[in-house]
Image: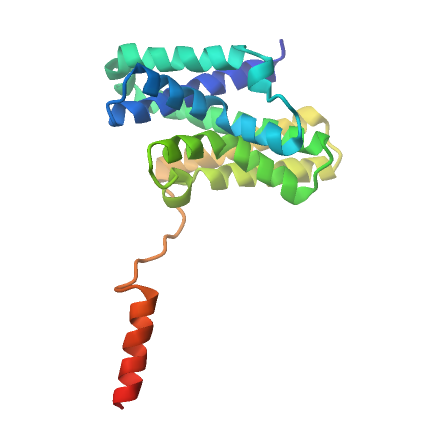
Length: 220
């Protein structure tokens, strides 16, 4: 059992816990908790494996992943209050999981012969895909599209993996570069509350603004 595999399982557990907490927000039953827990924990990896043609996905070939997600969901169902009081620790572990998942996604994409864009995309998808599925299931705009410096950290980590690979560094160094950069950026964003610029809402819809402009021109 390699260190990367152990970190992958730990990351799956942490992501499953964060997914289960979204079920707490909506007061779902135990099945809803487990569904969100599993979707968040292994969703990104499943998308990655399907895109890369690695079927069935690793989560179904190694049941440890699914069992880990179920344990995370049950843990939240039984002790949500206690875990919530230590949410800073969960977010710290979540950042570690983000880095590990990004590195695993980049490594698997590279092994399949993908180019720079493919490797970086798989790093981002593996790290954030589960969260996107979770948000869609509860009918929310995916958090990675509207808040927080999350997917961007994974993408930057993917680029660092590509750079390390270009200079023909050992694979262990490639993985470490991706993990360190992703986690470092995520920690920095959490500490300084960094987020990407957001587009401002318009006073009216584009069609209404166009009609107003044409109306002003016709009145001149």
